[in-house]
Image (cartoon, rainbow, N blue to C red; front, top):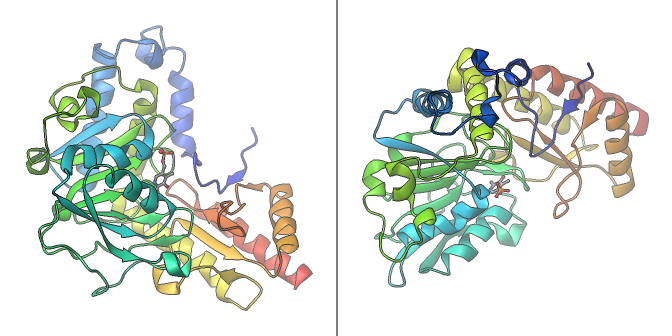
Length: 359
Ligand SMILES: *Cc1c(COP(=O)(O)O)cnc(C)c1O
């Protein structure tokens, strides 16, 4: 079997242990003679998978039943609309922190429903930073403060939650969820498309605090777009195979030691890679060092031709997914939880060689 070192931004690499377990159960799930994806979502087998996954999220985050765990469809992009649909009306205000393309998309949707106050923006410097303490301009009675905890395209990340004086946070954590500890007491909602750090594409994990759920509007919201619908019961067919895969990835995460262990190894991986970038001027990081992401490491080389050469030689050496997003260019190495230290070491030694032969 041949596996590459996969630095794809998403859908992204998954833990080999989770893939192998899925492979071994694919045709005959627990002796039932059918795959889990061929079974009723109301049957005992899938019910168990779903509830295991819910329990694992709560356990990993250190929370209890005060948080609902929902497995929805439509991607993180649908949450951009669902959040304001449930929480924002014409005479109400929400604060949004504008730190990249995904934040901008969330802002555009929120403006369809109510007032949006931009509490911070790094757009004028091509999104090279996230806010530090004291850089926010927030509305005291905002319904919520929305932020993007990791900016997948630009390569910036919050080191801790923005300070909101008690206003609930709503967070798009699609590209760093469960990669570092979070202070759950500050959140109304955390959502994440699974395909970066949690599993395959097809499911969006939405974690919502019950007392925040109670504050949602209920009138004139289509049934499927109302959080309450999904919190009450399994309303319709969930993306059962994707949830099954997410559950296997969460099992792997718990076996690895949970978020605390991941936090440590993610720090080690990022330090190695940024250390290589910072050695001299051959590689140039694209964002302010204090805002650097541990998940998506973005950098440029001396010319676009050299970047092309870098990406193609890397591919010849078994490293894929390194091309920067089309709106930024350059190189992006996505090193989510499932990207191993070994893969990062392989990339770093390739970068060293490449500098020697092209510097
Ligand atoms: C990938 C990504 C999205 C979009 O997710 P979809 O599941 O494709 O809708 C939104 N936000 C962030 C931070 C992302 O990285």
